[in-house]
Length: 298
Image (cartoon, rainbow, N blue to C red):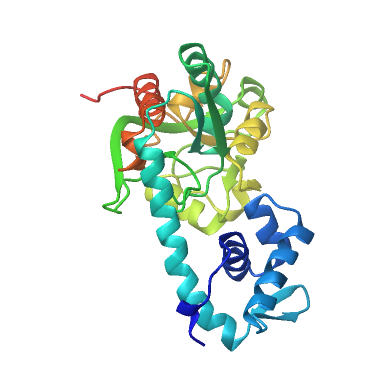
C-alpha cells in the first residue's frame, strides 16, 4: 500500500503506535491517559480509513497483521519526528510556568525530594512538578520525564548530564533490631542475621559477597523490589538494610552496623535532554535540584 498518499489523523496514528508497542488496548490507554473505549475507537477509525485490519486478537493481546507491521515502520518515523518537534518547542519556551516531569528512585522521591520540591514551589509557584517515583530508568528521549536523577552516567549523546554528588551507602538497622538481634558476628560470619534484600536475590548476594560480606540465601528473610519498602522494614526492626547516606541522614534513629563493611560509592547524575535544557522552567528546576542535592563535587 502507498502509505505516503494517505492523509493521517495524528491522534489515530498515535493510538495505533502506542497500542502496537504496548501489546494491549488497556496498557496503551494507560500510557496515553485515555479510556480504553476511546483508544479502541481511534484504532478502529484508522483501520476503516485505510480499509485494512491492523491487529488480530489473541486473547487479551493484539497481534499486528502484515499490513499493521508495514504501517508500523512508517508511523515510528512519524512518532520520532513528533517527539523532536515537542522537544524543540519545549526547549524554546521561555515561560517560568507549567509542568516539569522529574524521575527519581522511590526512596529519593519519598525521603529527600519533598522538601526540595517545596522550596522550589516557593521560588517558582507557577511551575508544577510531576514526580515519577520509580526505580526504572525513564526514557528521556520519549518524554517519559524531562529530568532524571540517576546513579549511572547516560551514554546517549542527545542527553545532558551533570555529576552533582557522590555519596556512600552503608548497612543500617533499627535500635530495636540491634538490641534483639540476631546480629552478624563478622563480615565473614553473618550467623543468623536477617537482611532485607532487593530483587533479584542472586544479584544481591553476589553484590554483598564482592564487598566482603559473606551472606547466604538463608540470611535474607525479606525481599522486595521497592527501596522504600526495604527501608521501612528496616526501620520497624525486621532486619538489616543497605541504604545511601542521604536517606539515612534524614531518618532519625537508624544505626549503622558492621562498620568494617566497605562503603558502596554511589554517584548521582542529573540528566535532561540537551534541547530541554534550554527551556527556562526546566533549567530552573534542573539548577535548583543540582544545588539542593549537593552542588559541585570536590
